[in-house]
Image 1 (cartoon, one colour):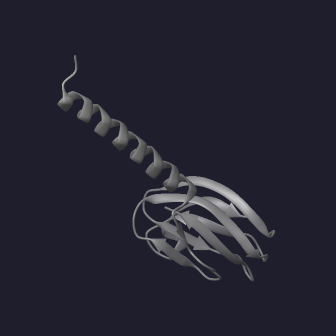
Image 2 (tube, helix red, strand yellow; image 1 turned 135 degrees about the vertical axis):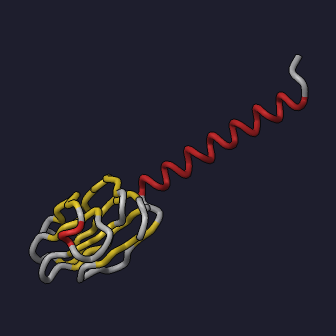
Length: 113
């Protein structure tokens, strides 16, 4: 027969697993939103996850980089933002930080973690 300590430990482990699953699911959906971006913007100075990009005002195509500064030559291009209004699933990790460079005349919003 299991002791009370064993039962409580098992319950604690189950609660922690559910919490970890919930946090991971939230991170994949993007827990932060950039608001409207119309010029080169560094979103987060750390590794992260780009979930979605919403093109609010179309213009020429833009780009999302895994970069350390707003100097796009210092980063790796990870996604080309379409020049059409809509919501696009990106679902890509970044190791440095998220740099969003909208195209000319473009306004976007990005969800990220």
